[in-house]
Every structure is written in C-alpha cells, then in structure tokens.
Amino acid sequence: MTIRAFIPYDDPRLHRPADAVAGVTETVRMIWDDMIDTMDAMPGVGLAAPQIGIAMRLAVVDASDKRGQAVRMANPEVLHASVKMRAHDEASPNLPGVFARIERPRAVTVRFLNDQGEIEERDFTGLWATSVQHQIDHLDGRLYVDHLSPLRRRMLVAKSAKLQKR
Image (cartoon, rainbow, N blue to C red):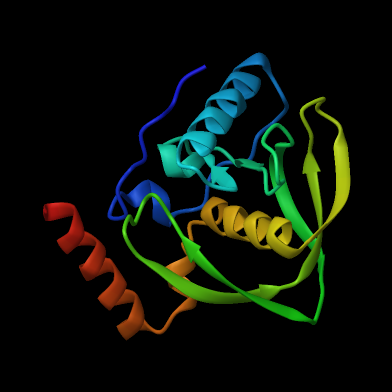
C-alpha cells in the first residue's frame, strides 16, 4: 500500500468526468487500498481516484469515529437525495489551505459496485452523505468550489495558489 500524491487544482484530469469501471479487479482493489492509505494520511473522510490522477470512477469514504470503516465504491450514483439540506465546511487536498461552507442533501441513497464486485444500494446520512456527494462530484469532474459563485471560486483558487507559493 502506498500514499499517493494529489494532483493540483489546475490539472485537467480534475475537471473532466472519470471513466466507468467495468468490474472490480485486483488492480481496482490495490487502487482502493492506496486511496484509503492516502485518505487516512490527509486526514480526510473521503477520496476519489481523480484526485490522485487516476481517471476511474472509484471512491472511498470513511466518516466513522474510528478508522477502518471505509466504504469502497466503483461507479457510485445517487439514486435519491433528501430535500432536507445540511451545510458543512468542505475542502480538498487538490486546493490546499482553503475551504467553503457547502449545502448538500442531508441524506442520499447511492448505488455502486462494492469491493466484492456486487451492485449495492446504501443509505448515507450526515457527514457520510456529504462525503459521498463530494466524491461523486470529483468523479463527474467537479470540485466543491464549483458550487460557489464564480467570484468566490476565483478568490479561493487565488488564495490557495498564494499559500502554495509560500
């Protein structure tokens, strides 16, 4: 297992949809393992493969109080989202040093291929739901700052760039 490097915000791979995964292979399992190690090293509660330069629809989420509860997902898609919203401060290692409060549905039902290669539907609430939606955005070529006004997004990107030059 390996801790992978994050690609920078301006890398085009972050801004285009990732490719669907045909099935869960040993390679996919190894990528998930690396993603979990990388997520735990951040520390963070989720990671999508495009964040580390892999253009595959793979994500991991672990919003548990104790580590070791990561959900591995291939090709996740939201089937249902609650109308009740939840605001949470979101950030990304691809845009270090900044964050923004984003509102997302408080609960979602997601369909994905699990680590056994089986189609699974699971309900997520609270921070789990926020993280799953954040990762699916990455898989669709979007970052949390894309939910902001263009002015606010430009300000955060510029602030992050300035912090990186220090």
